[in-house]
Length: 205
Ligand code: GAR
Image 1 (tube, rainbow, N blue to C red):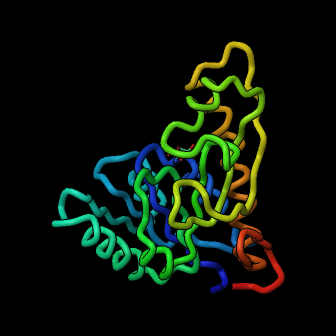
Image 2 (cartoon, rainbow, N blue to C red):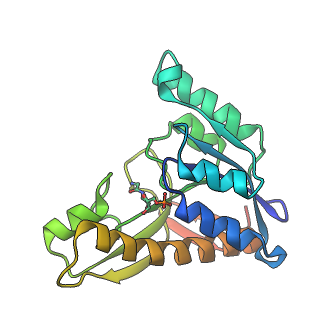
Image 3 (cartoon, rainbow, N blue to C red):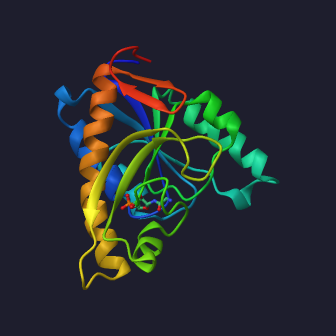
């Protein structure tokens, strides 16, 4: 791990998790630097946030490649050009190939308490199931959908009048704090992953 740790963040939308990381990285004591932001689509607010912070951006659209494999390889090359210690998928709505994951230690943040409610609609599915507590999970991405070894979790209560939007907003507030805390500790102390056990500090990677 470099010091400060080099982070590439992947986004597909609003990029509020990215913004939280950008804000944290402004403090040299945080120990990490967002060296680039990538997206799978043009014109998203996440890319504008990177522009405003003076961070380089790149876009890799699946539609611009002849196959999903070509897209994945192109994305990996774009990411690799920035030599990241860590890739953070923060609201990036694409699955990454095993080749990509073998090349980069990649974390993803998900708006539910894994292994519950994987996929694209964590807050909606939690609400529909009637759970009283949900939350957010940061995990090391593996070949499955939101199945990887868990780095951090934060609980969020479901309240009586919640709809999907209100619940997701409250989850996102907790999620951003969890992400900033965990990524900073990983940057400063390293991370080891043995099977499903993740430890921050110790055998630094
Ligand atoms: C976050 O809540 C993230 O966990 C979720 O999208 C939101 C992105 O917000 N990701 C998924 O649901 C992936 N399965 P942001 O663009 O404001 O950071």
